[in-house]
Every structure is written in C-alpha cells, then in structure tokens.
Length: 418
Ligand code: EPU
Image (cartoon, rainbow, N blue to C red):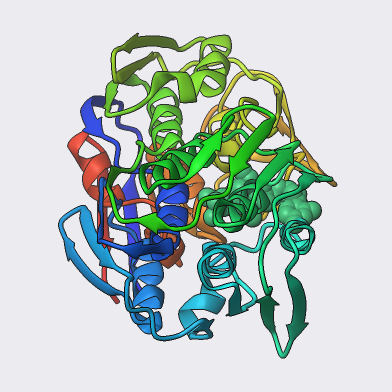
C-alpha cells in the first residue's frame, strides 16, 4: 500500500491546473452507452481510479473504449451484456448510473448494488421511485438491482429528497422514454447540468438542469458526440482550502468561479483574499484565519464534499467553529485522525465543534475515505514535523496527481510505495 509522506509548515505559492470533474465524468461515461449510433469522444476526463473503474465496467459490457491522455473514445453500438456484476461495480457509487442508462436504451438491466465511501447509509429509494414512475418493474435480489419495462412513459416525478444520483439516474432513463417527464425537487449541482448538456449533445431534449425542475421530452435514440467534462468544483475547492490553510498565494487555473462561490465566501469570511479572473481563481492568505460556522447543503450551498478539508483548516483558525453536516450522517470519521495531530474537535451527531489550536503536529494518520484523505493531506501540510497519510487508495479514487500538484506549489510531499 502506498502512503504520502509530508513535512509541513511551508506556505504555498504558484499555480496549478484543475482536472475534469470526477462526479461529472463518472456519470457521463455510463451515459455514453446510451448512444446507439456513432462514437462518443469525451475530453477532460480526470485520470483517477473511479474513472478507470467505470471504464473497466463499460468494457465488461462490450463497449469498445480507447483512451488517450484525458480523452476516451467510446463505441457502445455493440453492447453485449445488460448485466453489470463485477467487483468494480460493487466498489464504487457511480456504477448505479448504469441502471438508468441501460434501462433507457434497452429497457432492461441488472446491476449489482453500488459501493462508495462509507459516509452514511446511502439509500437508492429515490432512484427506484423514479424508475417505477416511468413504468419499470424494479426488484432487488441477491445484491443486484433488476429493472425491466415494456416501455418507459414520461410522467411527473417529485423527489422526496434532493439527490444528485437520483436526479441524474432518472434523467438518463427518461431521456429515451415516450412523452414528457418532469422531475421536480431535483439536484442543481454543476455535474447534473454537465450530464444534461452531454445528453443534449447526443440528441436528447432536456431543459431546466441547474434549476429545481427538469423537463425532458423523450427522444427515440441518441447518437455519439464530442464533449468536454467541466472542471472539478471539489478538486478546486480542496486546493483553495489548502492554500488558505498553508498561507501564501496560489492561482487555481481551469475553474468555473461561479461553482466555487460558497467556498470563496467562507474563505473571505475567515480572512483570506480571493480574486477571480476569467477561468482562474487566486487565493491569498496569511494563514492566520478566524473560525466560521458551516452548514453543508445541496448546491448552491456549501458542498459536503469539501466539508472534511474545510474542517482541517478550521482546526487552526482562531476561536470556535461549528460544522453542521446535513447531507451525510457519518462524514466525521476523519476527526479522530485530526485529533491524533492535536486538533480540538468534539462531534455530537451531525455537528462538529472545533476550537482552534495554535498548531497541528505531524503523526501517522489514515485516509478513512476520499475527502477525508484530502483533509489529512492538508493537515500534514500545515502541521509541524512529518505526517504519514496511509490508505491513500481512497485519495487516488478522486484526486489526480495530488502530490505533484502540491509539490509544484512548494510543499514537501512525496509518495512511498510499500
Ligand atoms: N438519498 C436518499 N435516497 C436516495 C438517494 C439519496 O435518501 O435515493 C439521500 C442520501 O442519503 C443523502 C442525500 O439524499 O442524505 C444526498 O444524496 P445524493 O443522492 O445527492 O448523493 P449521491 O448521488 O450518492 C453524490 C456524490 C457524492 C456527494 C453527494 C452530495 C457522486 C458519484 N457522488 O452522491 O460525492 O457527496 O452527491 O453532493 O456523484 C464525493 O465525491 O466524495 C462524494 C461522496
């Protein structure tokens, strides 16, 4: 198992480039199998394990995939199997998008229940509710979700909770349903909009993505297209937080500043300086920041996916900060690791109360999940002495070249292979 070894205390200076969005790419790649004609060429795909995992799953279904740098050409005209049941499917969350994609195109699928980070219960009842409303029969047996329909018929669906996964999954199936589907109380995350834009480039008729209501006029078939994935809001947010925590001045290139507003606003409230310039954002910080309160919310609220990196920053901010995690009930597993480094944090249910300390000190810690891993890397960067972050396979699932990017900013960080 690899580990990251970090000697902390250096301010960060320079610029780095953000890659394509993980949570858009892991939905767009499965959506590509809905093209019954022509190939999809998808650019700006991040080089991360979750993407490799989806690519292997698509190959197992009979897709022909050629990858080159950050681009993939996918020919799904000759799909041989409607059953996804490899270890890769069980390992990751986004494999559930195969259900909506296969159901839409073939009206049938069998997909093993998905895995993903251990951050909460992660039900898929809203996905199932949507598929059933479109006319599919859904059965869960032997750990697989089986869906089947004679035909899918457009209808009105009001989601009980705002869910990124359910919004995208039901949108995929509804794209090839007969008639009009209206999805209400949907997620508005940038990656939801990106998937809708991708489907429209393939010939779908989807309007309203990015608002509370998405209206889909079903089409007969979809055809391959060329598409570029949006920049990763969460990767960008993570580097912004790291820059604020370490002090210095860092320009983060290839971002959409609008997607980062809730993060920028908190960093400014803490005392950092943020400058937006076209598709880049610069964070300047003295490293001496004040504590703030945060409540994670669906977009455009503060994203749960940067809550853990942010909590590391708050461990050394002046005064008391309170984090309310309203999306995932178990997203504080990294707190025990931060405590090993001297953080003063108390968790009560979905709330973390953080009293800022003068410094963290290096320790051997582990990445308990993907974003917890990023949080521990940031902790290592600000801590006195040396930190070893173990279980970094979690980090590799979602952050491309994390040690190279931090090294480019002047951090002392390297990977050791054991
Ligand atoms: N929920 C339900 N029923 C459902 C679906 C969701 O009750 O059928 C609840 C969940 O329990 C949760 C809330 O709704 O409390 C939101 O869940 P959502 O469905 O939005 O999450 P997801 O689609 O499983 C995606 C991202 C997560 C990110 C969340 C929230 C992907 C592959 N994953 O998960 O990303 O935290 O949206 O924004 O897109 C990460 O990247 O580190 C990550 C965990």
